[in-house]
Length: 202
Figure 1 (cartoon, rainbow, N blue to C red):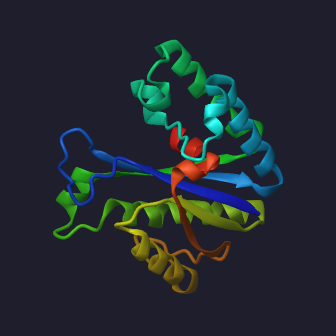
Figure 2 (figure 1 turned 90 degrees about the horizontal axis):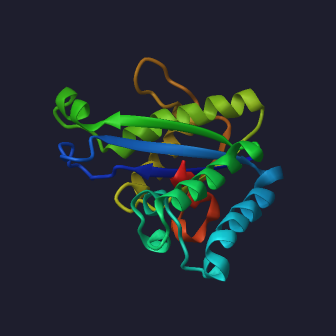
Figure 3 (figure 1 turned 180 degrees about the horizontal axis):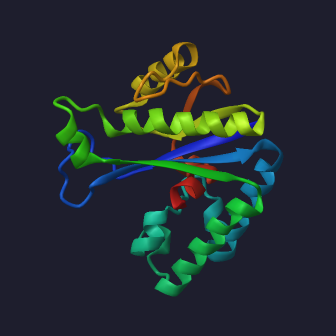
């Protein structure tokens, strides 16, 4: 089984003409359960080497944006150290057999193409769920989706996934039945999951 963690970047809601955020990204980090605990401990080990016991606090979170901008727990770190930390974290993905899949939505193109465009997350989720399904079929395994909280779209995504599992995705040129994704999307705050924090870095 795979634990498939989902995180997004560039969410401006239905503002599809945002001046500095033109693309909405949704990324999946698929972690084999046989390696999940080892990967979780490795992430904690990297963070502990940089931040000490502070990273064990339940409210601690180190996001990719913090490393890029020098904010949050990375505020006092020089750029070279932040780059090194980022590299140490992202290198764990391949080391523990995890896989990364992603979809990007050009928000202005979406607004131009449709009179009443759907939320970028809704569209990205359709395409990413198909990618995850194809991956799980190749692996001959099943997956559970765990996502960073997105209050404005959570109910829609839950309803969509239930429909995709029974009637297929039915969007674009090909419909795909989601036979390898089990249960529904499980939403969690990212500061409570090392995996979602790694997904955010990716």
